[in-house]
Length: 101
Image 1 (cartoon, rainbow, N blue to C red):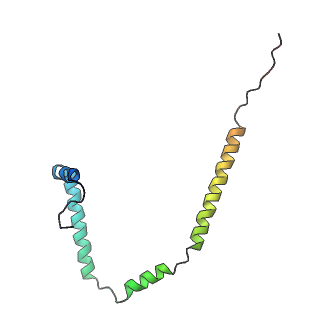
Image 2 (image 1 turned 90 degrees about the horizontal axis):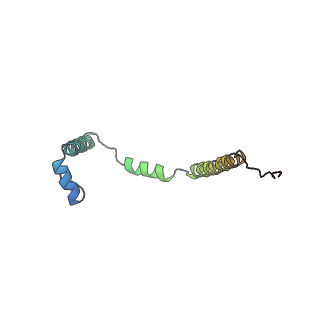
Image 3 (image 1 turned 60 degrees about the horizontal axis):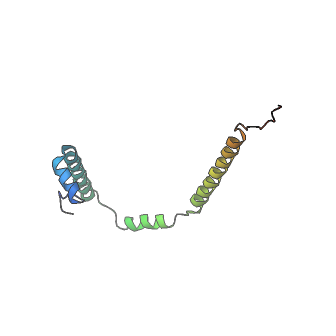
């Protein structure tokens, strides 16, 4: 993407050309991108840090997170079942009574 280029379809580019609010947002976005790039060049990154970060992410044991998510789903379904039972049980039941003539 070239600097100052608007991403998207022709309709979006045309809208941005005419909308001052969107132009201001694009300007803020470009400014933030410039600041981030300047920070990247200012702060030296130690050699091998990127590899260390990626290795630590890959070695995370995700099983507890998966188990917790599965337990939450089961608890949610149980709560839904209880709510349905209570909701159906508290519904007024219409009783048919025989009318004496």
